[in-house]
Image 1 (cartoon, rainbow, N blue to C red):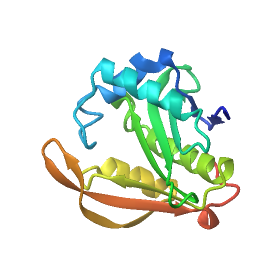
Image 2 (cartoon, helix red, strand yellow):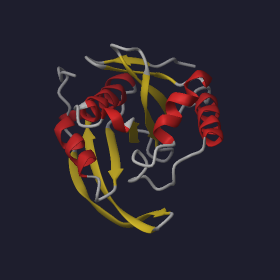
Image 3 (cartoon, rainbow, N blue to C red):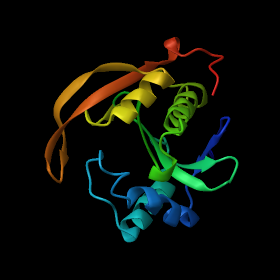
Length: 185
């Protein structure tokens, strides 16, 4: 297993551990943090299962799923979660996703986190294409992805079933050959 440790100016990414359950529940269990996600807030027991699955995925060969704890480099606390899922049929491509505690929104951390994920995917894993899908109503995610250097590709209609019905997704992507080697974080 290759352990992941990526740092930027304010944030870091590392493997999740069983000790992260409460910190991750602060994201997965928060109605504001999950309002644009295709599921209702998760219980603590469900977060325990998510963490266990992430730890198991870290030992897979080949590894296709990275569920990473997002840390604040100043306080060292876990403030969010980041995912990178390499597509089995297209191993040059991966979907990214992220969540941060709502009390930290509006500070540019989402943009920083997306940049860290892009750097990890392109430089750390040698991927060619990274993409993410967002709710059309999630304009904060739209801004973060665009500022981080991702391009908006288009809309997938009725892409995701949610507790309140089908939801469209807006897809953004970045390509390795468009990603500057000296991109600052």
